[in-house]
Image (cartoon, rainbow, N blue to C red; front, side, top):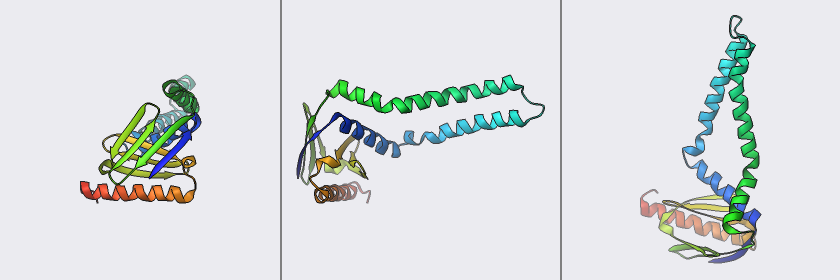
Length: 181
């Protein structure tokens, strides 16, 4: 099976986000929001205790406790809102403005991905996961390799389904080889 398509810088940025989210869902670091929520909860609990405690801290003490929460929230919000622009700028600096010609070729043993001067080749025995996202197909290889095929790369839904089915079959084969099945 072969695919050749052109990808814009915006599509490359979207793919980068899709892969980041897929990877985060599979790692402990991706679940760090739980720890952040616990820290926020403790700070808010202490703040509420001081606010409701009739013999407790004065207003300045409460402000002292709330200031880190406000600063962290503002820093997180600004970083999150600027993340798309930051990532797009990084991709522009490393790959150029595009458009980018992409070539993907698969058979029963290998997955090959080519763009510009780069070529990635993975054996299907290492394929680990597939995420079928609204933006396209994201998948990963052991120990560290990732690929994303945007929906715009496929001629129609039938071709997309054929690729997805092929990748899913390779995942099942790899799991049997590794003893994961």
